[in-house]
Image (cartoon, rainbow, N blue to C red; front, side, top):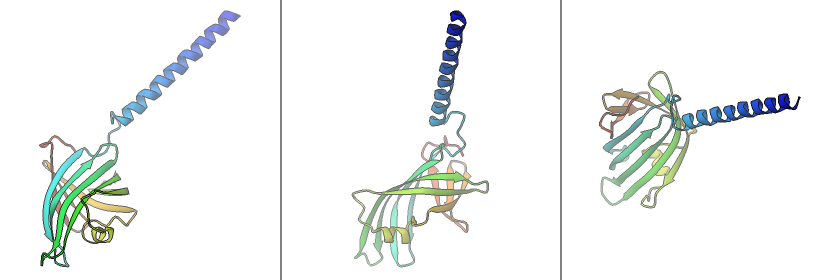
Length: 172
């Protein structure tokens, strides 16, 4: 009788160990995006210059990362000045976010967190008005993939082209 109980305990222990190993493997695969990668894999850069409606001129660089796990980051470094040249701002910010792919070339950004770097001397109100309004809980952007670039914009028009920094190795 003791042999049967010992055998049952050994089987329970083996099954438990097997379940722990399988659970750990699945969690690791999710973390490393193996088999569970349904998001974008993009690391691109856009250089830009534009004139805003209130006569401000901006030049800068925008890096965008979309990871396969549904997270991403914008990194923006720019100078911003009025046309008269007597008012200048530096923007140096990173914005992390979660995203959801829509089936119509749109991406919904949510849980956006802004990190203002030390070189940044621009107010949040100015940033939200002229660069990217982060006051909403969610933002929707359009994204179209063309060769090794993304055309990014809003529902009405494209606003910038972002070229993959890995020379076409990214995939959408």
